[in-house]
Image 1 (cartoon, each protein chain N blue to C red):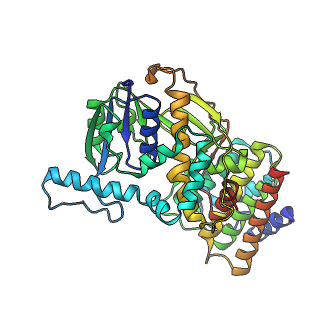
Image 2: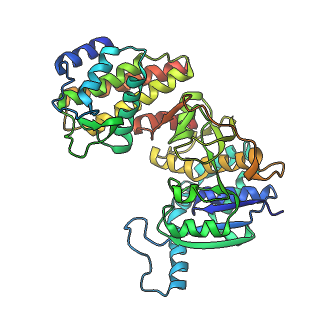
Image 3: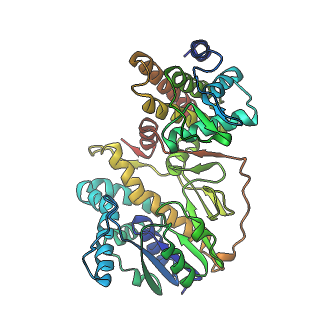
Length: 291
Length: 157
């Protein structure tokens, strides 16, 4: 069933988890607008600048696909036991977790997940070409899948409302590293879906709730370092849980996702957190990945 | 950990202007003065302005990744402002740890704010490496980690 939902795709585990989980739920977005970064993420230089335009876009997309899915695939290759443990653990809280992870790790054809796919060469979310494309092809609810801060050029598009799933139970946990801050402060993850507005995590809330506790038992394996565990969290755990929340708390029921009841937040409540210092991050990761 | 003693020591050494020499322009903010005011107000409750100062300092540490001696109105960046001096850095870290210690770790809100401030203290110490005497830097680091463990153990109790 085609849903009244478009998706702004920032290539990577989050977009793939959303689309795979929505497909499992029988929800097919109308349009996927795939951002194709025309500059190399590491060097900032244009990719394939000697190629003709059509080939340049394809080449840029291939390089982007490899870069943005590098760490999930490295984890599959270098830490298979960790991945299996995550799959087992996630199966208890996310329907079809194993299949979603496998789909996201493989070649991913966006045409299988949305009625229409539009690719836009852009330098990032602030690129006016992206705003023009979204303005032309999207209407109603657009799912935001990451890639930075949404600018006014997109937020202010008439007839479009961006939906974001934040890894923190609003208003209690705002800002960065929401999943890990939730584990430290509240003892369990939490998620919120809201219509995006100016300001970080300030928009009207569609749904907000605590999630099931997740812990992954790493007994019997050499514990990967915190950098790798952090990557595993954001390659698999966080994306799947956000996708599960989207499928079960926002898109269930078939209502127009652009017109869902949503409540304004009391911005005096809760705290805005920043990225965790490595010492605190280590404490948070120990609560998720138990040795 | 003798939080009050640490705070009093850092404030005494920094003096009434918080260790800073930077003068703020009209409506501007001298970071040292703001820190001294926060030190005097410990353990709270804070006024809205003081709360904004603590929040702004956390933002400067984490987002701007620098803390300067002077800001424009509303903690806007002052491009000509010098960086913090040694005494200001010490006072900043001590203020953050002290306000973390002042929170109630058995409440979620208290635990959250305490950990947020400890997070800022740890990040500030990273920024202050080379600007503090090594023994002072090490002692402040131990203090921040000790406070972190206290808060986390309080959460688990």
